[in-house]
Length: 490
Image 1 (cartoon, rainbow, N blue to C red):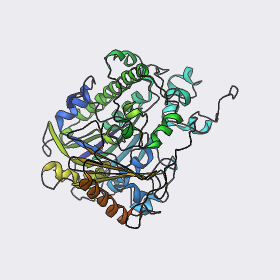
Image 2: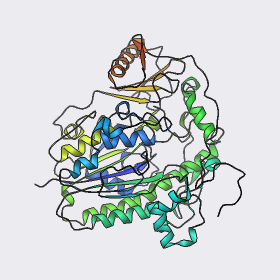
Image 3: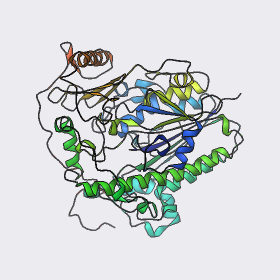
């Protein structure tokens, strides 16, 4: 059999509990449900650094953030390719694949070459008018509908409106999601003797939460659950979450607004699901449909008010656990569930091993584990923030347990996810031996990682005296606008 096609479909900031076929009502995801039936749903998949840029570099390199040097969006890494080796698209192109990548890449620099022969961008923000005009989706929108050229932000309004329920300012057919699905269908329709590696990356449901008509009214806010609140000591252990709430004007969102946001968030996902359906139809129309590996995932989740938090960048499940669906007819079982640990870092090895020559780097042999031909991961380590600073935190997932370390104050959390899947109470005082064992696991792993600053000091995790993070705002304007009060722009 010839090497398979490989199709990666990615969303941004989609929680793990948003796929109907996996028991997550009231989500409506008929096309993701198709993928669930087509293959294996990995129900314990994680982003080892749950924020945009680090997650994407781990995906493209198969390397953990400690090696890519990207441990947050705020502390830029450097020389990623030199540290890690050729990117995934480069690697597959060298093996004879036709490569095409579309959508959000969120690399630094923005237009960094990643090895795609076709490489078209649609990002979230544009610092200058020139960047905005060179965005591939924006150029398409302006050619199709010049009446929308006045928009400063084509995905919805940010800054103080970041977590305010919105309506997309253009019809569904003119959105970035629809453009992206259409371009993917075009690439899938091209005749070429080579197998393809396609990467399709949606900007949404990342805030602003602004689905188009009719997806804005597909879910009734009164049917949504209120955010989940745990023990206050658990929810407030990581002061960075309170800082993030304040940064995006989300520090005092009431339950009623949270329910409205959750309704529109699910509407955004149903819209993406419809776009994914167009892509799946194009895959199935090809004669090589069955010899196609499809992998669907997100870069991280969104708290959506759970644990009194919004955004991501924590190791609560809502933030770091992601949906992950993998299918390959005849090679993987259909309609199966895989409860072993998995990480975005594993997807580089999954793609390369599907070609018959696996290269796993820092990842685990996930394809082998899904086939029952390799053991599942026993442990998964996550980390975020610059080691040696108050921003640093890490996670250890092992068995039913999750351990979280917060350098700011040397705080620790321990959860039994089977008994307490919503992480409402910490077992740090009830389970001292298990706490110590997972802390030791973190110490050993971090001591071995390629960290520019020490996360371990004197044989234990380095703690710093607790200090609240200074409350500041992130002003997310675009196209040269940097603050409130600025006059009209041309």
